[in-house]
Length: 133
Length: 160
Image 1: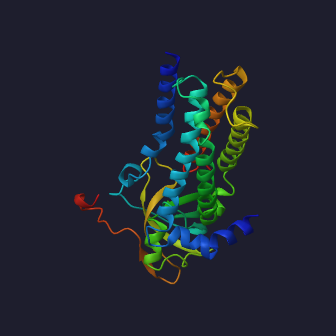
Image 2 (image 1 turned 180 degrees about the horizontal axis):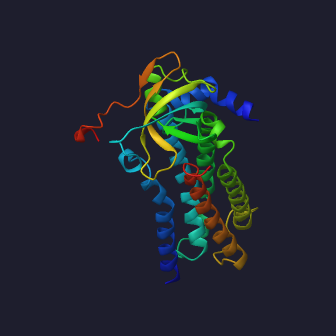
Image 3 (image 1 turned 90 degrees about the horizontal axis):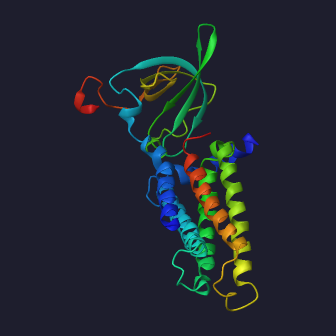
């Protein structure tokens, strides 16, 4: 009996341990891919890490600085598109993104525009096409 | 420190682990890390549960090989863990939960070594199948620590 209670404790513990995994990996659950936001900010860090690369920005707004974090594809996808070495901290970039549903300063990156006018697209789905969402 | 972590992450090894577009890089290393985890924690849990009374007809002496499986699993996880750390050194090197995980693993290994000494030291057979309160306590602590290590490891993806 005591063993059965212990086994139950183990199973419940495991479920608690894996619950965060459910929160991961549903792009449309975390970001509203039918909407677009945009800002121009200074890139403070580019993190080439699994499972998704991240860009961190300082965005000047209303006299202060807002911290923003954009998420992208996996590092392998960026490498295949020759994009792993092109982001330098300190650069000013214009970003468009699919905003987070919870209203936080995060988003799924769609395009970056460099100061020399180059535009790169990192998310190709059409927000007006329901089949793309 | 941040500079060192950045250099580590930007090294050829770090760059290859995180970006190589092949299943043999990051996916394989991460999979081996999970297999190693099973080899360390699984056999350990078998021994701990036996010491706490589960499957009490199994002679404790028969469970001596669990430590060899654990050792192999630990080697796999130490090496894959180092590779994974290099590939995201700037993130994990400053994540407090990562150091919590390492501390818990260190404590769990100390408990495992103590259990091994108390059960099997200096003789071929065990000291019979009677399990002292002290050993039961060690087995309970061992289970709790390994579950804690797994949880802390999983939380590394979500906590900074």
